[in-house]
Amino acid sequence: MPHQKGIKTIVTNRKAYHDYFVEEKYECGVVLFGTEVKSIRQGRVNLKESWAQIRNGEIWTEGMHISPYDQGNQFNRDPLRGKKLLLHKSEIRKLNQAVTKQGYTLIPIDLYFKEGRVKMTLGLCRGKQLHDKRDSIAKRDSDMEIRRALRQKQK
Image 1 (tube, rainbow, N blue to C red):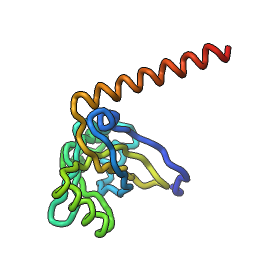
Image 2 (image 1 turned 90 degrees about the horizontal axis):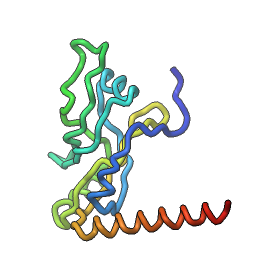
Image 3 (image 1 turned 30 degrees about the vertical axis):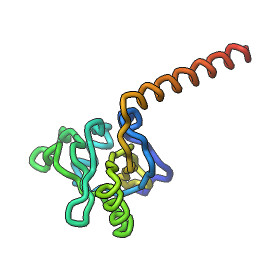
Image 4 (image 1 turned 120 degrees about the horizontal axis):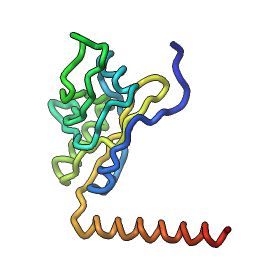
C-alpha cells in the first residue's frame, strides 16, 4: 500500500485544553505493534486520561488506551501498556529540564496519521486552576455569542 499524503487526525484530547495551558507542542512518533495500528485505524483509541513521562532518557506515554484488535488473537497487546515516543535527544533534554525544574507536565494532545505513520502531538503543559477554567469557559461562551450575532446580522 503506497504512503498516503497529508494528515488524518484520529483522536484529539479535548480535555487537555480544558485542564491545562499548552505552552509548546512537539511532534513525535509512537512505537506500536501491528495489531495496535490496525485498531487505531478503526478509531479505537482513547487519550483522555493519558500523560507522558521521561524514564532513562526516553519518553513514554502512560494511560493511552488502545482497544484490542478484533482479529488480532494472540498478537494483541495489553491495551494500557506504555508506548515509547520518538523524539530527538536534544528535545528530550529540554523537556526533562522543563518538567523537573519548572513543574510542567507532558500531555498527549492528539494522535494522527502522517504519510502512513502514526504520530502524536505532545504538549508541554501547565495546570489550570479553577478560576482559569472559569475564565476559559466564559471567553468561549462570549466568542460563540459574538459569532452567532454576526451570522444573524449577515442574514
